[in-house]
Image (cartoon, rainbow, N blue to C red; front, side, top):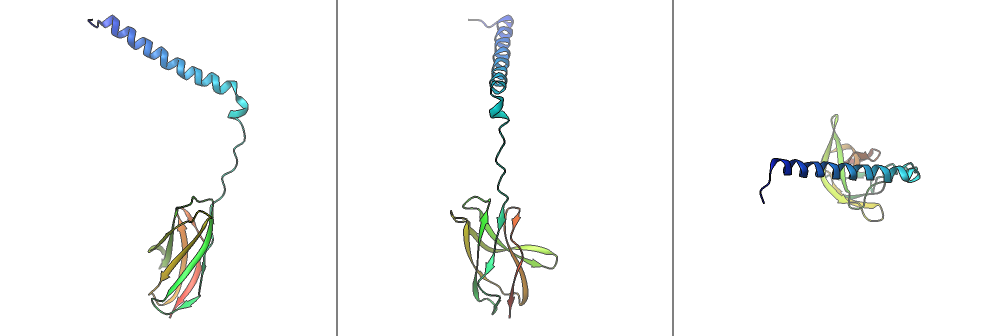
Length: 135
């Protein structure tokens, strides 16, 4: 069967009409159920993180724990410890996943002596700043 220019145009026209009817059918279906389309959405839970160190003062490189909870984050989200160094927050190699019940526990060792400003972050959500002094 030889495909002529007229035959090609007919196939293209059928394709355009088919696509338009699918779009119109979707518009008619959504217009037929306006209550479903305008049903109020439940507001997304605002994400939040709490953090509590097990101690407020440690010797250099002494292990301590930071525990807390998170709301509005998915289980398995990375919980990362950050330390304020000068004017910047620096992510430390202390990461743990958020548990299925919204809790986490992270083992930490710090070597920078003095008062350390710390926080836990996950994505763009951060906990309030807490302090641990290394002596």
